[in-house]
Structure formats: structure tokens, C-alpha cells
Image (cartoon, rainbow, N blue to C red; front, side, top):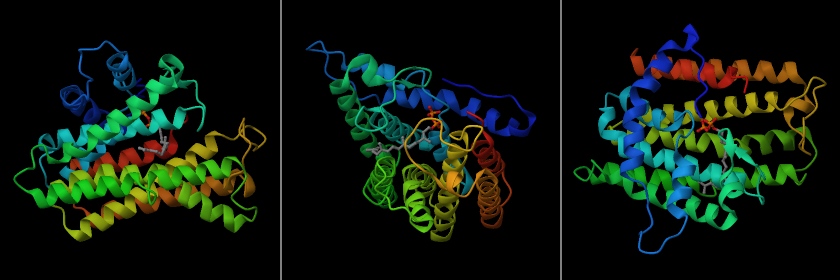
Length: 304
Ligand code: GRG
């Protein structure tokens, strides 16, 4: 569900998201991995429930911005943007399962497994994930080398060196397996952040790759995404602290607890400053760049 502030500070960001949202919704609908209707199951109903009305749609927006930042046409990237939202949605479905975060709510309603049962939730998660892979070829069959590169990007982002690996560290941190020293925690946190940053990297780079970005531009986007993911997780860890600097609920520790809230706020500020500097140093001034700068501030300063 969308909860957008209309703060002046983020005016370009919200205007861009609102402008692009209809195209993204249409691309999601056009590429829904519906099950054949011959035998009645609740798969299609559960699929609809998982994807609509959806959340902020920031990740598909990142795909369009990645393309625009390097001079591409965002309209051509809508199927790829839908692929990125499918991957995001599947990660949320899996993350909410009882064997992971065991979340009963998602996007201001009951989580998918809570509403439709675990079996169907796993199937919908796999269905949308699987639907993502071919979508980078839509509109790009004429430039197969770019589409193949974007496809490889998806494989890498989801795998053990990306979201899956990051989530496994998250699970280890939850059960206290990650060692006790502060340095261990630093390493563990930076790998855990992959669960968030890998998808941000994928979202941005897929659009940029399909738009013909240079190696240097892609490297800058990787570094930016890594910092954006770190900033997002740091702000998440700060939101998880209660007034006494302890975690609200979970049985785990974070650097925000070990080193204190002001240290975490300092690191967050440095991280977003560096992220924005990378954008400004590597890409010429444009609307897409302004929107990305505002998104960086928004993700780090959000309070929910
Ligand atoms: C096989 C794709 C796949 C993943 C397996 C479960 C898992 C590994 C990774 C979990 C990754 C995860 C859920 C990270 C947290 C991501 C995050 C910051 C979610 C919230 O993002 P918002 O607020 O969500 O942008 P909306 O609802 O607005 O889309």
C-alpha cells in the first residue's frame, strides 16, 4: 500500500513515481504468470493478492531511472521493470514465511501464507520469480547481447552471492551463529545487506544494461546500489531500536546496538553522502539523477 508524504523535499521523486506507476502496473498485468484455468485452484487469486495493490514500486522505478540516467528510453524498459517487481515480490513472500521472518502482515494486510497457506505462498513466490527471467528479452530481442547480460545479472543477484546469500546471513544472525566480536558483526552485516543491495543493484543495472551503459557507468551504479542497500539496512536497524537502544522484539544484535545509536546515525549520514556523491561524480545533471538523489535521502530518512 502506498504511504507517500507530499513533502516538498521529495517532490521530484513522488512526481516521477506517480508518472511511471500506470506503465509499471500495466506491465505487471500484461506479464502475470497465471495458471491455466481448466482446473480451479486459488493460485491466480493468491497471485493477484500478492501483487496488487502492491507497495511503493520503488524497484521497478529504479530500473526506469537506471535506463534514463544513461540516456535510454524508459518506456522500452517496462517489461524489465515488471521483472524486477516480480523478483522483489517473491523475496517478500519467502521472507515472510514461518521458516524465515514469520511475518503475519505485509503491505498493510495479512501476509500471503497467512491468507492462502504456506503451500500456495511458496508456489506463488516461485511463479513470479520464474516469470521474471524471460522478461529482459521483451523489447530487446534485437540486441540479444544486452538481454543476455541483463539475464545474467538476474541470476547473479538472486543467487548465493546476492539475495540468497544475504538472507542466509540474516538467518544466522537471528540464531546467534555469526560470532560475537564487533568485527565479525561488521562483516556479517555487510553480507546481510546483500539481501537488500543486490536487488537494488539488479534494478538499476538492468535498465542501464538494456539502455547500453558503459562499463564505468555500470561500476558506478554497483557502488551506488551497495551504499543504498547499506543505508536502507542501517535505517532499518535504527527503526528497530526502542527508546533504550535495545531491539524491540528480535533475539539478535546489530552494530546499532553494539556501538550505539549516534554511531549508527553518523554511519548512515556518511553512507548516504557517499552514495549521492557517486551519482553526482559519474552522471551528468538530469531529472533521473535528481530523482535518485531524493530517493537516497528518502530511504535513509524514512520513519516507517
Ligand atoms: C529467491 C528472490 C529470492 C529471495 C530469497 C527471502 C530472501 C532470499 C531474501 C529476502 C530479501 C528481503 C525481503 C529483504 C528486505 C527487503 C526490503 C527492504 C523490503 C521492503 O521494501 P519496500 O518498503 O517494500 O520498498 P514495498 O512494499 O514498498 O514494495
